[in-house]
Length: 149
Image 1 (cartoon, rainbow, N blue to C red):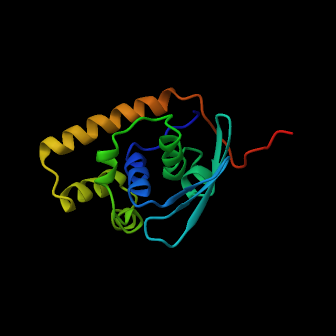
Image 2: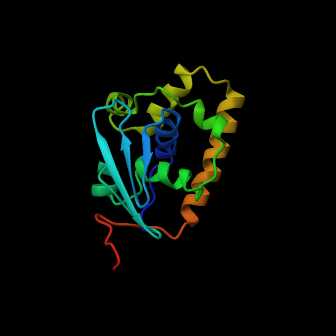
């Protein structure tokens, strides 16, 4: 991948999965935002992915909609029990509140969910492992996936 996302985007993907906000098709999916205001379209062909979310479209890295698809496709392995712990989080408002300081938003989530230090360490370790997997995937992020004949 040309550009890596902030690691915190994995947590946003966990929430999308925990809240069942991902609807998969054969080569496309829709992902609803954490506040329910927007729906993003993710498309893929082999290892090439595109999405209409701002991170993927404008920043050129895999945003949380793409990451959630990679998890569902089992290209990234994460613990489903851990993913379930990230339900009902409005990342949109948290990211705005913290002026796009994604780490600060994540720390607030840890506090809101009342995770212990041990739980946070385990969650962060598992997420770092998933992030390493993401780094090693031969992905190409594009604005629009071209369909073969």
